[in-house]
Image 1 (cartoon, rainbow, N blue to C red):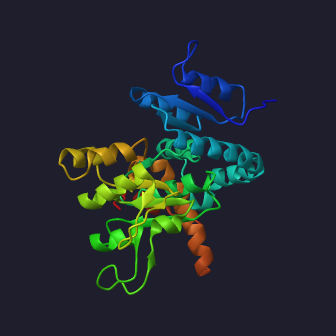
Image 2 (spheres, rainbow, N blue to C red):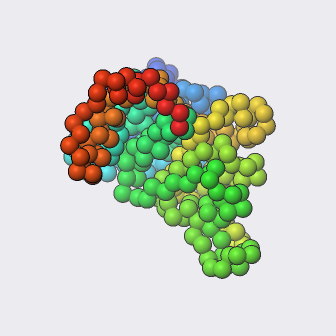
Image 3 (tube, rainbow, N blue to C red):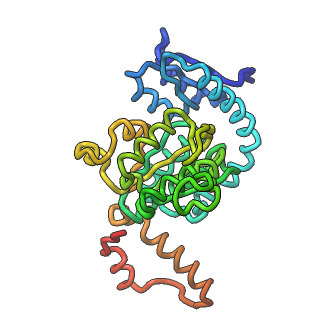
Length: 317
């Protein structure tokens, strides 16, 4: 039996790396969260360590307030994990059978889901990429539901659907009279998400000035409502998604490189449906059952022609 709540370890150890340590701890089924302290040039290793099951990583020089928060969260995580074992067993069967509409058995989809499960309780930022309609929000919800924030709000906003001046007030909120038409105080989505997850969909469509503001929030973990001068802390985990190739957008100077690096700590890519054809049948059957039940229809299955058509469809959007 272990008597420790948290293991805090350097990435560079005399006998093995922090990554190997995490792997050994996992191999021996020791359920203690590990926080790794790492130099900037080991960032890639740190991400591998998170994938291997580390709880969090802290960059040197050690920011003690951040370390304290991470340690407190890890301890809370340990406690919750105990309570969650029972829950997880239930969720495990749900994931196998389609957690809240999560359906897919293809390699590409399973890889995305597995990575989502592994990093669900980490603090690290996740960037989900994939074409429109490939199911990025499904992965974002899985990140939320499989992590320690599942009882907290999951708030989503589509950055391409809202004009810039409104997007800022949606995200940060505003005071009464902050601008023309601001008739009452508005709570922003960062506040609304609380200790939950804020899902920024289509972040690639955000204008550069707003990108700068989001970057500042991610760095300082504080926001300011429009028209207010005091800052308030941000506790929500930010998950972003885009259908654009952000590396190319960075090259073309349409997306800030520093924000890209900040968001892209753990990239999860979702291939489009035409590249994961094994998912077509289970999805089709799921929707058939769902809509047959809703519409009192007796439809039981698909003709061969219908299936052939589904398989040859390019599935745009």
